[in-house]
Length: 467
Ligand SMILES: NC(=O)NCCC(=O)O
Ligand SMILES: [Zn+2]
Ligand SMILES: [Zn+2]
Image (cartoon, rainbow, N blue to C red; front, side, top):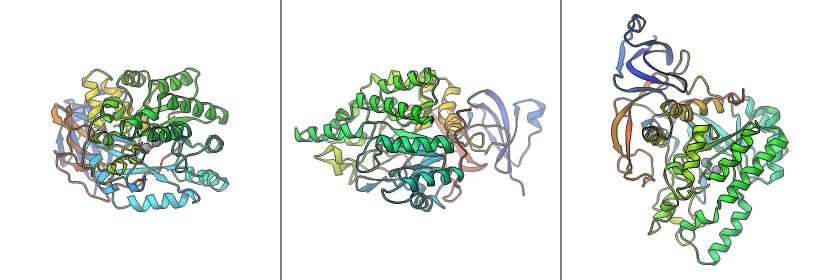
């Protein structure tokens, strides 16, 4: 039996258009759009009608950088796929792409299987995987080809974290050469981890153990240098490059210079770099630990360059790098030694709202909001137009969004499995009202009505942003 829904009277916002339109959903997909109030719209009928008058009708958010249950520093990110995808849905995100992890000395396949096992049957929304490549060798390189064929079309490498995820320049070059041949996209954590580890050791030897020193040793220049080096290695390999969690003005400048040369180089930033700063890292009583992530938060002056990069398309994507650790028992592992604080911030629930606030504040336009949070991440990682837009044939992953509602972000009310909020007390204008995933309600008028297991694994094609 076919299931049909009509969403009436809202302002449909996509990356390319804003139009008052009614949307017909049939069997989990968008079947038709028609300008509201026209005979064509009146002919769209269904047993279930959702009134979106005065609201926005948006494509569901696509968050291409999350770490559910990620192992780090002797502990695990505190959101499971169940709690994390539920929280994502509350915030209007309907697809995540999480990172499966290869352990050093083990096959990619083993890591991928482990991530499938964590996610399968547990997700409220659809999900895909990137692969973290921690060990480049002949077998790994061959496996990369197989993974691309089966829909894991992107690979993260780390210039940071020596001894854990780190790859040296030779390993990076070899993986990039392989990606250049098989159509994969290399995602780079661009920080000079070898130099940072020297500075960490020196800082600790001076007795500089507080969280704020995490930001001081992970220097802007070491992000810029690694970004530059990654770009040159990608040029040598003839491969495209996507730099994750860009935080520093100087790193944006490297991306901009490469793009000015016409190179296929892309950058992502995250809400924490747009809204938080080293002031948070310096909060007293070890509270700064709540803001320890890498790349680190930067002095507030860097934010203007990030906003500018998002406007000029030198940065193309905003994702969350959601990697939550509770303050109690997890962030506290680094009391007396900032290098032992697990790296990562919670944020999967708040990306759409914080970026809407950026629209309200005049940093970006409404369509650019949808472009950087929905359409481009979907295109960059081979999910478009199934995800990231509202158009006939697309999955009916749709958010009804109240642009006038006011809310205050707080750990008291959020749905992520973490005991603090990085945005505690922040007022934002705009709120998710209703969320559909493939036409099925997940959030219905601010009630969670979804279920673990509704979300399915979604294989991806290769990057669609190059063509
Ligand atoms: N970003 C962060 O601090 N933690 C997650 C791992 C990573 O993305 O590097
Ligand atoms: Zn990273
Ligand atoms: Zn990450």
